[in-house]
Image 1 (cartoon, rainbow, N blue to C red):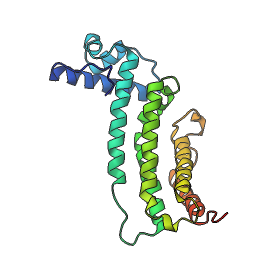
Image 2: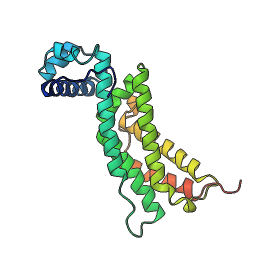
Image 3: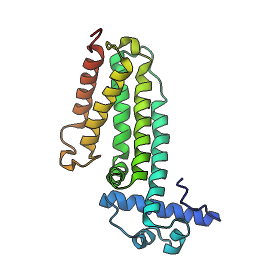
Image 4: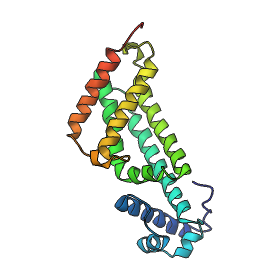
Length: 213
């Protein structure tokens, strides 16, 4: 957790702070911005503002603490969903579909909480840095899930091909989920059609990629 969060002196203090973090996340999801006050957080959490100031010095630090907690939760979930290996006899195409679907489902489940934090990253360097680290971990999980099949990738640089595949997949999914500034594009097209198209596109790129050029 952020070092600017003071450690609790007793369990009751920790529980009160957890409630405050829950309230921050709820308000961010509802308003998609930090347009709320610490008084509103305290009222939503059912705690005193004094108990919040006993742990952090400002609303920004409280939001950063909430971001740290949520990113760890998403990171733990990500490790769990990507830990499953291939099914027996899985073709390369099925592996690509599985990995894309795994990443897509993870992002979709967490889109409501990720979206406001991504908006805040534009103005908060600490949130931006932590978000970039989380993004890099997802990229590595995506790549690792397919890198063992590198011999089936028709590209002179298989890792680069997988990195680019992730970049495209993430960009399309983030746009559909509204994880960015282009909110008007969110939800355009059928979700499962988009996943199928992404799978076909990535397969065409990986299997029919350039070789020896």
